[in-house]
Image (cartoon, rainbow, N blue to C red; front, top):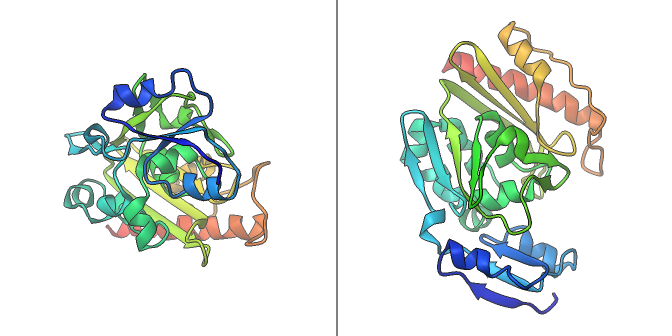
Length: 262
């Protein structure tokens, strides 16, 4: 691991100011992705700005229409929160399926979506639940936030403060885990909103999370075998693209069944 300067931010303003005059600065919260990447030399930040203790990033609130979660909210908090379980049970379940207990205690919502790993769970929930990502500078719709392979719309010194999830009538998340890592070989999130508005988001299948539009139409029409054809499907040592597509279709059917039975 390279040497770096560590900053413990006292507030959001101080965290942003730490970028001034420095190159290659990274925010540190749970560190579940950042620290392993540093250990393997994949990234070499010169400064780390620790935002773990900022109270503004630990928001957990429910309104009539939204569930608001701070960027530094650990996965385990989301998984065990009665507020989340009541407002969006599928989101609590999603958080409970991330990694292992150690990862769930340390890993955070903001870190997960900012990293945008193509096999991560939170991007599927964020996109499926019509979320808005609120930063220190602006609000970004989830549809515009995830831009590709490990990439997002975030600027270099932009800090996620909280995520605003639109509360659905019903929702479900189904996932097939890669045994060693707990990441999704495929994961499908379905959310049902008033006026037959359906959101289906898939993770683990392509180079990034995406809205599965064919599955949305299939759900509306009572069909269970939606097409899934993309140019960026993943094939690796864990599974071929054809296998992932087949698993995604199975998960779509399972999630649909859960919603119909709820």
